[in-house]
Length: 517
Image (cartoon, rainbow, N blue to C red):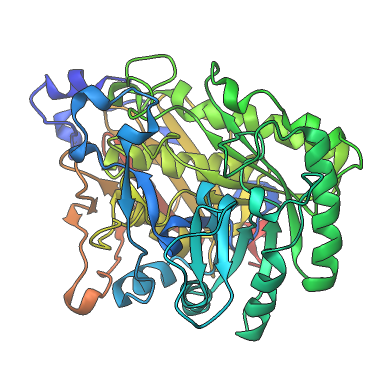
């Protein structure tokens, strides 16, 4: 695979969009009608997080264009964070874009949720949160979150307050905030599909999470949490432990307690869903892009980078098999990098990671994947300030429309070319291929029958503009989504542009595994 620098140096910008501008690699043949079934995933597999600071206001990661270069690569959080006001979840544009990705789960959580004070009154809230808490959640804000979920066909996952304000004299968790919060949720017709005790118990950040919260303390608190939820919301599934995991080492604050420690603590936590968080690297705010812990743009199309999520998922799967056999596995927070996302995450360059991670982990056994975030700084699929789609949104939209819940085996990935397959959504016997061409050369797929090609390319890998079959995607008048129309491949071959992401729908594949879809 060529680096971005090499691509730029051959006079074609950062991407070649026609086969005549680059060499053609050897054809790949596939019989879509004979691909065997691997497994079935949740219809809401592709899901998203909305950070709690969008509901409460408070600090968030500072935008890269507002950071002096001297601030990058530091862990002085005060220098790399900024204030935010609550987000307008009633925005018609935001609701239109999100509903097009449904049905989905939405996780309302994040570090802010660990120390939230729920103001259970319609009276004006106090000027600041009481002692033991850091932020205020009003009834109006929470009702807005529930209303948003209803409007976009989302089921809700959240976590609860875990700071000093809800702890008793023995430092044990109590439902001091959770009880009134859950009562109000029921009163407005809301429901939690799933809940976590709190966000990332192995990544302490006092006062949001008590310092030195051991696995044994977590087990004690989870037992109290399960007892409370069995009365307050008996249908809600309990997920955990929700540990933060990284694709790079050397970060002591999230390595001192492991997922295994939580699973084997006493009393043994009983998880309905095994949950974890994963980021493959640290963003430039916290580590230089060229460092081992960081990630630079010229490595973004490497097979090594795209394969990073596999190792942690396999570890979590083994943990589930040992301690919670039969439970679902949810990746309840993930993205390009911890510390607020990669500098180039809104750009087309990150669509390769976004698309590949979904398809890769769906095939390996993940049941739901929550991207951080739907909206948030540089890591949202929707721009936080304008509610315009970022580049990955268009890949998410095509996934939702074309990739069904039955995962097929398209064979092992090749270096520079990754191929995945699902039954086509809503089309019995149909198959959709996801072909990711990481090379600066044209690829040819021999499919043996006609197909509909949805090819995503870009004139600039580091730009936000995305083209579908050569036409730039953009919202129309009234924030209507553009027409998503394929290019019909009438012969037995499909040509894939250099550096492209391709959804190939084959409604007449006649795959037996897809006859009931």
